[in-house]
Length: 180
Image 1 (cartoon, rainbow, N blue to C red):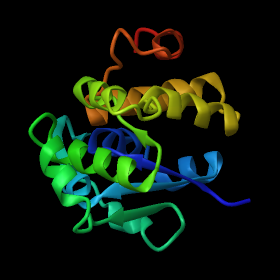
Image 2 (image 1 turned 180 degrees about the horizontal axis):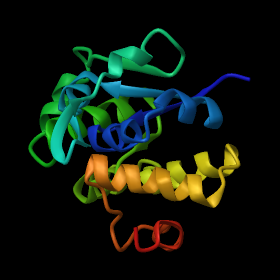
Image 3 (image 1 turned 180 degrees about the vertical axis):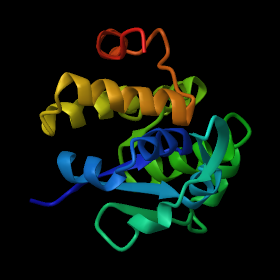
């Protein structure tokens, strides 16, 4: 069965990298993640605690390039004008991601409120959010509640991510993360 493509902005890529297994998530969901070069450049570090000290751990997206898990795409000349237009409204990574989504007809994932608004204004399909991806992954992989909790804590701690109050899966997140 062919994999469905899904564009990731930098923040979603960081959140998934915090789980330590972008490839496992892609495989479980039968997805190929695509990230614009501009967004890949923004996916910098995760926060880890080593001997009681916060250490910034570089995110290595290139480790996933040899499989069907992840592809980094450059904008082509026809996409640059739209990218520049969008970059006046959202960050470079989101602008490149949205430009690719529009020009190449690929669904995208973002939690960024402004980027989601641009997608709505441009009549794109509603972007997938981090928590929806994690929930789908947990269900597809039949993770135990303790494994789901551990995954969500890793995303919260390593990627400094908390879902928006408007996130449709916020209740699921809160039920699984508890008071951790």
